[in-house]
Image (cartoon, rainbow, N blue to C red):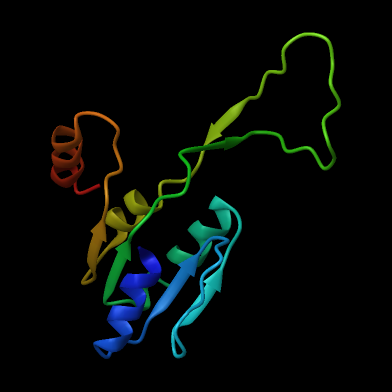
Length: 127
């Protein structure tokens, strides 16, 4: 969805910066593409450019949690269960909502239940 929105904005005359995780999609010529692979890279790419934007559309969210420890090699099988410890990722949309000045900020609330209720709560909190 983000790529389609970026292309339409470009067609309408906007200068577009697209921050994207790994995908197998091509971008339209004239769109500045910032490629990231982690939620931390996404946070940095978006927040460092935020003050220079008029409109920010967050069409998708990174995961809410990530592994606290990342192994550099394959984990070998062991007896017993494997326990993964997770930590929260930074909430990019919330940060933007707290720091916006003149920008228009559009976000999506991806929920699996109570869609309208949770969406309204986010809107009323101003993220």
